Image (cartoon, rainbow, N blue to C red):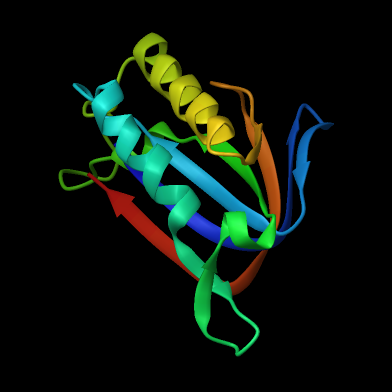
Length: 145
C-alpha cells in the first residue's frame, strides 16, 4: 500500500462535471493498493495519517496534526501509484490490486479514518475524476509500508 499525502488549503473533486466532494484545509490523500495488501497494512495508514504533524503551530513550527487543526481529508483511490514504467514507454499496472479487493481496502481505510475522528470525503472508485486543489506549502509526504 502507498499513500501520497498533500497538505491543501482546499480541494474539490468532480465526475462528469458534477461536484462530488469538496474540502477546505486538510489533506488530499491518494491511496494505492498493491497486490497482497491486507487490513493489517491498511491499519498502518489509519493510525499514521491522523497523527502526521505537518501543520504549523502558533510559533510557526511544523508541529500539529490534522486532528489538531480540525482539517478534512479528500481520499482518492489511485491505482497508478503502482505504475511500472521501467520497461518501454507504456506503464504496466501489474502490481496494483484488482479493483474489487482494492476498493474493499480503500473503504476500510476510509471507515478507519472516520473512526479516528476525521471528516473524510471521497471520490468515486474507478471513475474518471477531475481534482482541483490548492496545495499548502506545497507539503507532500509519501507513505509506503
